[in-house]
Amino acid sequence: MTVTQVKINQVSKYFGDVLGVDNATIHIQEGEFFTLLGPSGCGKTTLLRTLAGFYRQEEGDIFFNDVCINDLPTHNRNIGMVFQSYAIFPHMTVFENVAYGLKARKVKKQDIQTRVMEALEMVELAHLKDRQPSNMSGGQQQRIALARAIVIHPGLLLMDEPLSNLDAKLRLKMRSDIRELQKRLNITTIYVTHDQEEALAVSDRIAVLKNGKIQQIGKPHEIYLTPKNQFVSNFIGSTNFLSGKTSSSSAGSMTDVEVQGIRFATKLVKQYEGNIIYSVRPEQIKVKREHNRYPGPFIKGRIREAVFLGEKVEYKVELAHSGDLIQVHEHAVPYHLLMSEGEQVELYLNPEESVIYSEGGEEALN
Ligand code: ATP
Image: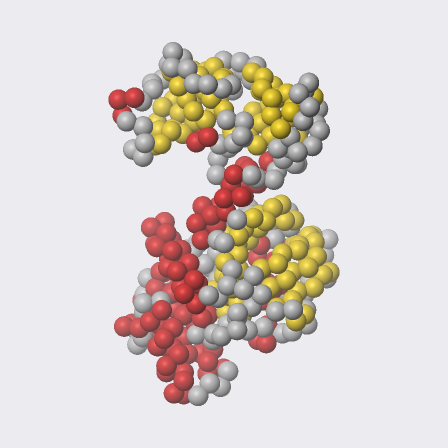
């Protein structure tokens, strides 16, 4: 099986006046699990369908293994596809569904038998090969679709929200099965989802899109810990955004930051004086009782809500300075140490972990 390396160079796709994909550049390595992530209408499906050859981009080029495939029809691109709707033929057996693509490619009967059984074994459906798919579960039908995609030995697997129609528990199981199979086959995979947790869980790298435009490309931890703008920060996980401002500091490369009445110096990647958005994730904040001081900059507040969820506690804290509410998550808190509503607390923000954005949230400054 040849594994495909994909280069998308400055690709734009229009629908009349609507820009479905806006100047996308992505280079995907052989065997990589790459996810296109973003809210509805951001262009994920359009980009995937352009890669599949269902759409022709108006601008830019696409290369598979350094061969330009702009004008190559879908059936010559050596891709396997799995969609949200299973797109299974109800009148055929499981075996016949999976064999379909091989018959169309005029593969020898003996080889069809071997390859279909191999693909069905991989998705753990070999024992159901003679069943009609119409009376099978959603998860099983999606496995048939997966077997049908891999049986042709594609160099590239394209998956568009394949788990959306499954219930929450099955979705978790299927996503780890897909990832395991993808690793085992070492097949380059481009996966579309709007589910940020799913994207973090399965991907080698993720591209976050908004209005057809790529906002950031990175490994899951890079996207989560250092989002490049406020949109990415807000879309991935939950984040607190606090308003503040900066002024140049006397200490050379350091910048003074003021947030919620506290001041501290931090290093920015560029000089910036003015209003900022200070973002900090709920689990990056330490919450202490007022008499239990912690070294570092503090914000004073009062617990407005404490929700015990077993593995973690979720606090809503009202800040003394502004009255704003902030989310704080603490993990593995012994129940007897839980803080309760009305308690006065001090919140410790680690400037090293926080991300500071320019006033409009367009760029990260640290
Ligand atoms: P979803 O998660 O809802 O499927 P998406 O991120 O996949 O969304 P796309 O379906 O790629 O988004 O749509 C991107 C933009 O292009 C949207 O503004 C959409 O309305 C527009 N669009 C997509 N397909 C067409 C089409 N066939 N004709 C006209 N406009 C389209």
